[in-house]
Length: 168
Image (tube, rainbow, N blue to C red; front, side):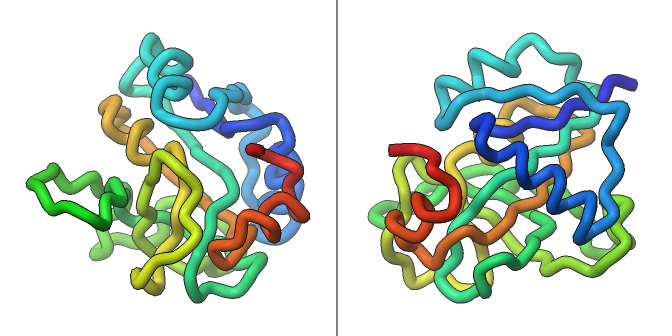
């Protein structure tokens, strides 16, 4: 089965080294793909991949209350649309009744990830992370999708830039 590490930007590659050092994650046999940020880039880059492939989405995420540098293993992903409510399918990544999904040497926090079309600067949601890609990856229907997020900021674009030099 093909394995892919999916990251938004080249600057996130430092997270692979951190995941190897801090968590013992070994994905040497996986192909690295950079998608670009956001839904259109995700769809255009990943639309032709085999849905049976193993996908490992590793990237930065914000959180209202998790400490900076916390690794989060994502259990479920949803879109973040705080101003309206409408029915959407649940996009589960981990069955909580099972053990760890990723072969990690150290424990991580498990949490929901909310995907946004813009950087989140404020939210009442706690004990979760915010990104700009994962829900779109999950919506493509990959059967073996795993996600690890590294908390880069507490909903501060300035702190994110200081750490990552990423999205302007």
